[in-house]
Length: 196
Image 1: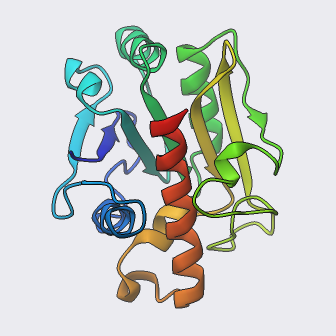
Image 2: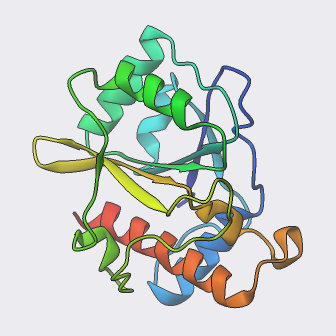
């Protein structure tokens, strides 16, 4: 099984962090006994029927995000059918993500998840919420969710940069302790998505 990366329009660099998903797949295979492809991940366009082949999709970048009406409908149908979207703001996409996802779920707003939420307490416990991987504007790392009929369909990590922490050590030169925290939180997100 491959992890999926969401390809979107608007000019944002959806392709950021190319080593992140293979490293996360390897970590999950080792610690969660999953069977993810560790060499390749799938690039899936928002409006593609291929989206439904991947139960977990990751979205990242630094800039603009634009969904057409048909793309928003496709993503909504994917999430309502049991799919899960993890959005990780690599810095600079917050306003765009919120606008784009409002098109997908006009009736929902992102809510900040309490630290007691099960996503923080899967294989690993994060009693204080998301780890802080990179500092940008001095804000605390925050985890938001879109909840549809009691089910968390989208988890949005902001002011955090989890994906940077998943990358090869040489890319950002993060301390290994920080990388491990990022990978553990990533494993929690995947475990939660597959078991909820």
